[in-house]
Structure formats: structure tokens, C-alpha cells
Image (cartoon, rainbow, N blue to C red; front, side):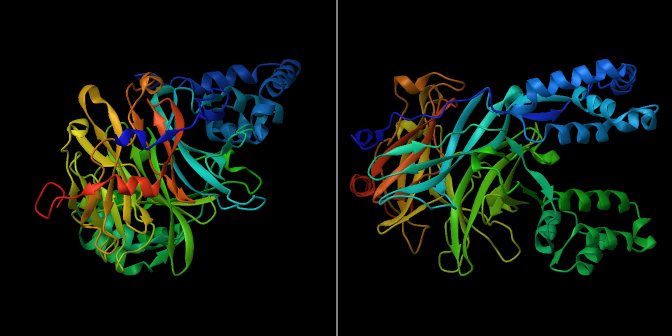
Length: 496
């Protein structure tokens, strides 16, 4: 049986409710009918005497100071966000302003509900290791109150053999801060095409922008638009489309002295306001060298959108939207290099079939070529990929997921031709990893799911989420996995 190929290891990552960040809290804005109570609260805090104000601040920092990095700075920032509600802002002392910031703050446990859907890539720091060891970065979907997802990390060392050591994850968490980014004109154009926004205003703006531009240049170009264009009936709506499309690309960065496990990629735009889900990381290689890339699902509470991120060091991340018919659903996963000069990705645009899509000259992911549709009993509801393809001597190894009766998720595998990934060479006839008794119970029962693994010393290392609650690890000898596969049907069949 193929299920005996994978060896589960006893090491697991479990949700830690002590991993918290500080978020802005505005009383009244969490109600169904928004009616801010900010002004009244500021007035009440402002009427506290100096002694009470000092005592409260000392108590707050005693309780929370060690749990967070620069709590003082966070309180100052939160005060600045609401100070326009203060009737006599100039009369407030520095300590009162700091205390107001504390009242407009709250802790949020980023993984209190669940920790799941990991991917694994080689860590940027490979110093201090012994023979046969590899330091890896594990990305994690962490879920907190309100089913709000963010992207977190863990660091581990694998090898030699089946050894696995996960580094300590303690210490205050840090949310990335927005940083300046050089926008790409072609991505702006692709985004406007996506919403069918093509008129004289967009044409004028695109013609005036350089290939790479910053925010100041973008606003200057908008400010220089002729009044004859702005006064048209489509003027205001077009400006809104331009600004919204441009804002979809941004950068976030972390202090250099933060460890990887302390960094949290937190929703920063409206499109991802209800979650950043299922990051699929891969180490991409081209003529300029290696760079970390990933795709993830942005969710605004009603709609999903696919986003890509890139980083040279897992400290600064640049986020951009993915456009085109090949990026219109969950599960996009990038190849680790170009194939025949093409940028390729796996996708699942119809919700149930694994496909192959190619990036065109206008930075749009083209209509996909079907690779594998539901066919076996354990995957009849839907199939999808479990991360980026892994290059082996025998072909591109693709880990898949399939959904069967009682919405039970299991992991399988395909092998694609190295030169022509449109062709499925072989497939595993059964599931590689399926929920066992220990995996069944959790936030979402009966699920094993991965967003990508890697090969080290001939072993496939497969991190996986168990019932969307905790993360386990399994290994599979690559040679044995390939040997267990069966030849794919000829082109024109279900996998052709």
C-alpha cells in the first residue's frame, strides 16, 4: 500500500495562545452598527489625575511590557491614530497620551484557534550546521479569533537522516511595517484589464508612468491629468480604480534583529482584511540568483484573490497581485525555475482540477492546461496541489490533495515531465498520507494538508497540517515514491 511509504515523526507544532500581537481597538467599531465611542473614552481618560495615570501605566507595562517589542511606541502610534477625537489634544500630558494609546489597544493571539497548512524551504542562514544538516524555514497559516489568518514562521534543522529539531519560538512577535515599494507599470495595466477599466484616463496615466515608479510619482501623474478628462462621467470612478489597483502592491519589512519565528505577515490591504491564507513558499532560481517567492490567498470576507510575494532574505517582502484566468482561484503554486523560458505555476481555476498556467508578456496568468481531475475514490470531490513542484531526476514531483467522503482530505502525488510539464508521466495510485486516528480531531476534522515540502539527501520532507489544528512532519524516500507510481494514461485520458 502506498500509505506505508510515508513515515510520520513524533515532533509537532501546536497552537500557542501566548503568541500575541497588539492591535488597534476602537470601542464601538466592532458592533453591527458602527458608532464610535472614541471621543467619550478619551475625555474620561483625560480626566484622570496624574497619580492615577502613572499608576495605571506602571501596571500596564508590568503586565504586558515583556510580551511585546516597543510597547511604548505602539501606544504612541495608536494615540496618534485617534487624537483627532480629543477635544483638547494640546492640553493632554505625554503620560495621558500614552495611556490613551493603551486604552485603544488590545492583544490578539494570532494562533489561538489553529496552526496549519505549512510549507518548507531552505532557510537563508545555513551557518553553524553539521554534516548532513539543513536549516529550514517553515511557513505557517496561523488562525486566531474570528477565523482571521496571518502568515507566521518557524525554524527547524533537518538531518542527518530523519532527525528533526524545531527551534524555540519564544519572544515577542513583530508585525511587518509598510515600506516604500517600486511599483510596476505592467502590473497596474494588468489589474486595470482585470476590471475592464480601459479609457482615456487610464491610457494617459499608463503612458505617463515609467516602468517602475514610487507613490509620489503615481500621485504626481494623477495630479497632472487634464481637467477635460477628469470632468467626464467616468472620471471619479476611474481614479478610484487606479488608486485601488495600485495599492494592491506593497512592501513590508521587519527589524534586522528579529528572528524569523517572531515575524508575522499581517493583513495590510482591504483585499486581505479577513485573512492571508495558505502561503506556498518556494526558493526560485534564475540568472540573478535565488529569491524566495510564495503565493497566498487574500480574503476580504466575501471574495478571494491570489497574491504573490517575493523576498531575498525573509525580512523584507514585496507583495503583488496575480492577474489573469490562471490565478482566479485558490491553490496557485509557482515552479522553482523557468521551464523552456516560461514562468509556470500550478493552479485550480475550476475548484476541482489541477492545471498548469503560464505567465504571458503582459504579466497575466493564462488559461490553464488540465493536468489531473478527480478520478479515484479518495479524491472524487476535488483535487489540488500541495505546493510548488519539486524537481527530481525523474521529473517534477507534485504533491496533491484529494477530498473524499465525509470531506476527508488526503495527500497524493503526480510526476510531470521535466521539459514538458503539461504531460503527466506517472501518478501514485493511492493516497500517500491520509488522516489517522491521531489526525482526525481538530478545528476542521479529518484533514491532512500541506502547502509544500522539499527534498534533502534523497528524502522528501513533508510538513502537513492535521485537522487544521497542529502541524506534523513526515518523510518519504524519493526513489521509493517514484517507484510506487504507475504510468499515466495516454494524452486524451483523464490525466492527458
